[in-house]
Amino acid sequence: MCGMEKAATDIYTFENLRKGGFTYVDKTAILKELADLSRGKQFFIARPRRFGKSLAVSTLRCLFEGKREYFEGLAIEPQWDWSKKWPVIHLDMGTMQYDAIDELAAALKSYLQGEADRLGVSIDGNTTVPEMFRRLIIAAAEVADDGQCVVLVDEYDKPLLKVLNTPAATVFKDFLKPFYGVMKYAERYQRFTFITGVSKFSKVSIFSDLNNLKDYTLESIAATLFGYTHEEVKRNFSQSIAALGKKLGKLPDETFAEIVKWYDGYRFAEDAEPVINPVSLGMTFDTMRFGNWWSLTATPTFLLEFFKTRPMDVSELSITETDLAAYEPERIKPVTLLFQTGYLTIRDCKQTGGMWRYGLKFPNMEVENSFLTDLSALYIGSDNSGTANIAAKVIEALQRRDPEEFVESFRQFFASIPYDLTDRQNEQSWQAIMYAVLRVIGINVGGEVRTHKGRIDLTVETATDAYIIEVKRDSTAKKAIEQIQDKSYTDRFRPSGKPITLIGMAFSTKRRTISGVKIVKGA
Image 1: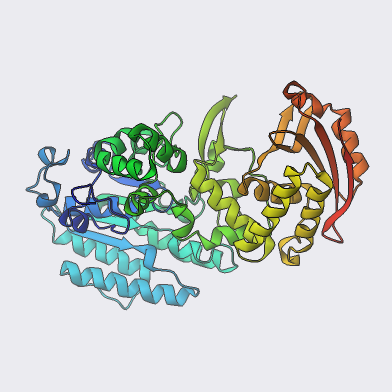
Image 2: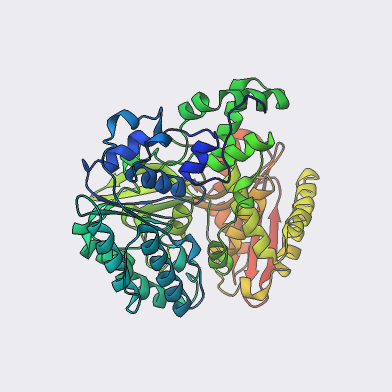
């Protein structure tokens, strides 16, 4: 590693990154467009975890505090007026994760008092949390040359995400709403305001009092502010790419193509250039191997808890522009949640009438494997060894071209799923679980596959065979087969010349497993 670039994987402070000699992919040209008032003064951007939000906030703090020495050689250095400095209130809400509202209130009061002490101003702590925040903003502004301060809020949604899937969500939302609303009503005391988080809650929720914020979450100006473009990776990490390729026995171009397959594909605006996950890339260079770092760096527990009892079809996903942008804590939209947490990204965008609709997809192999592996383990109610066990049986059955054993493997699998994971059943639930398991073990599976007469629930294709699977709940396997035949689903695989096997599966709500099977070979 001597002489190579130093990719940071656990440093989120701009000062420490620059002092430590780590590679900083220069995003200051974009930050300048936000910070110089040419586009406004109060901004919000939501991005998934591990995309550098905290680093961006830290960079802005150094910028407004006038720490020019850390910006030497960066795009913004010759363009910024370094003679001006502002007091910066920096709220890192990532530390505010509590189960009770009184604990959160006490922690916030202590935090605000700490910021006042750091800035050398006095505020009265014997008041409400929003009022204490308002007084801090005014006090900080009063010591500035121009009577204004800067407010930076990182991970604003962390307190609410901690209780998102619980009855406490409404209580926390109602507490945070007036707290964040202070930034609007004290706007005249603020030179610049920047808020980040994973989720965007709708304007009738936490953001109802912050309707003056410019939301750049899906705007092209911010599309490459977080994450690395292809050109940025090649320019900043050429030596690391070469070293990784040497270890793997690949040329640099081949190595970069592998990086793209594993970690690229995030698109945060309609026609934006895709970006690569910076932390996953850094971990790969640090360890000199490709790995599933997304799953290892803290899968959001609230996300998995949400999907425990609400399986969904992840094979084909689309959503309106309104639903993509925000949701209510009490009315969570699964697809919105997956997009905002980074498990899905924009594939395309189409306008129908006056409505824009986004097609979504998994951004890359790393994220898809992470999501489906964790989901499969949840359904089994155990660790990933359960998934490995079902994987071995399914793969062996397909290799032996034995559809009966394939179905029997899933019958045993479904029978082992705990009751509380299947208490909200429909056909899509069972179908989604099958899709997740098959996909994560590397089977070529399709879900909700379109034909000229309808949609096939599941398709499985191997090197030698094609399987068409139709799922029915509290019905019969015979009806499932009849639907396949009546709608000519087999036409999709005729050109391949492969033998086609039809599998009709009936699920029993009462028994919570496969209750009937009909198999037609050579259809």
